[in-house]
Image (cartoon, rainbow, N blue to C red):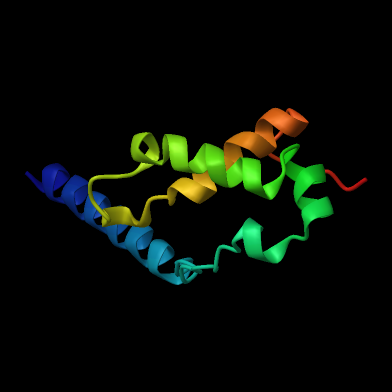
Length: 104
């Protein structure tokens, strides 16, 4: 009987040592950062817009008007991307072949 109690005590000691180690090494989460999304139609001039998306602003607006119903969400939960940003991201990918903004 004494051996069973010793094993339980060893398990309990291991548990508490692991719990103490976890508490001592706990790193709190970083706070969530919500960044403002810039509207490319207002933030970029015509030339920069054309270089970035390979379309003029007027063509972009026409295309957005045509496909906006397909891109709209039925609910505003979870902060989904607005259709203007969905189109901008898609066109940027097609224009550059990458999601990264090129430096050159």
